[in-house]
Amino acid sequence: MTFAKLEMYRKDFYHKGVLALLAAGNKVEPRPVVLPAVPASDLPEIDPRLPRALAGLSSQQRAAVLLVHAHGWTLAETADALGCGVSTVRNHLDRGMRRLRASLGDDDA
Image (cartoon, rainbow, N blue to C red; front, side, top):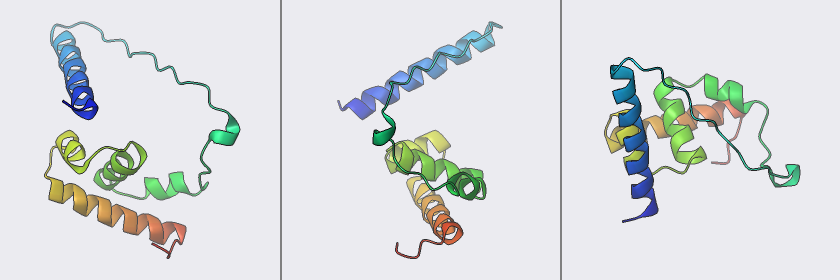
């Protein structure tokens, strides 16, 4: 079993546990997020126009672009998370990337 598959099961187990707690009327506290310290020289350079360009995408396009390109999810994992087929994710990804390129003026891709 691959690490990605184990990670998917872990996420699924966590979400089922949260749903069970909510169904029982319990308050669910968010898990704290602890990020490792990263030197500024190791951070990627991000175009300051990117957040506005991402906001211009539909929610499905934005989710597909971020899950695949920012988080490294496969098309199948993204399709499962979004509740659609792989071909639909491919369409959202293609259209979203086209709109991002047009918005940011990147004609090279």
